[in-house]
Image (cartoon, rainbow, N blue to C red; front, side):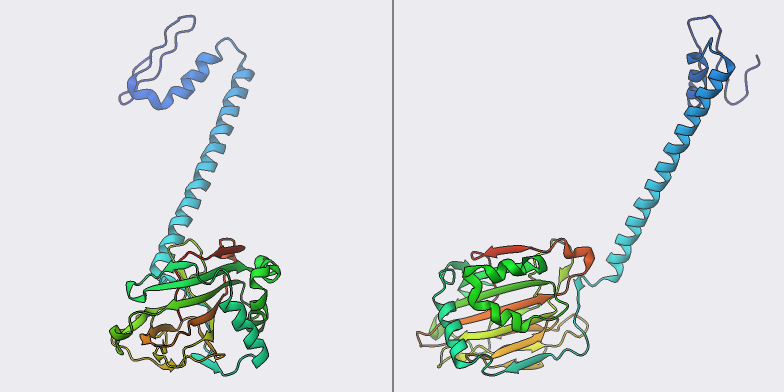
Length: 317
């Protein structure tokens, strides 16, 4: 048998114990192994074994191709998402007003009952630190839930007094919610700066989905439960979303003066902040905040069915 010029054939000696294979012919090991393994078997048996191995290799190759295609599609989807997304999911629509005010949102009787419930709530005065050191301290509690958790929220004795407000505010398409009742402890009266801010500019995106993107609220509502009568400052300032990049020197598009039983509802994509304030009154500043989200099917499974927290950082309104 004459040796090939580029790759030598494997020489299999029938009846011999040794089989010599050129090192450069390793890509053909399977073929020679088939011949060695089936030595002495009939031609039909050898053909059957070879066909079986070929079918298995074809199946393996097909699985490898499908897997490679799926990986490629995943990489392409990630790249598209990375290039085209701003990092925020927005669901607000053009017909939503920037801010809507409603004085005397509740009847006097209903508001008095809700105010007592909030101010006497056992979870309200649990200490919690704000993200911004200029806040001082806040206290309160947060409840996060989705559609499946609404009934748990409604039936929970700790939140019964807030259910009517939630039901009255809920938007038809929203399916994830954050409710918090927040008390803000004021800082030093003489250190008050009328040009300062108590809460820096931000968007509400606390729905709690673990993702590199942020999920911005569809709508946010604030009911002022307790406001000191002599409070100076403390306006809620709102900015239109624009292109999503708010300049540092931007002027607010609107400003809200807090007062008790005032309901303020604004677009979830509205940047907002709270001006510094002070008071000599012993009356506390307490707000009920309800964030509503519309989360698509792709991410809805990551929302909280029902989660309570009263030691987490919260944003004062």
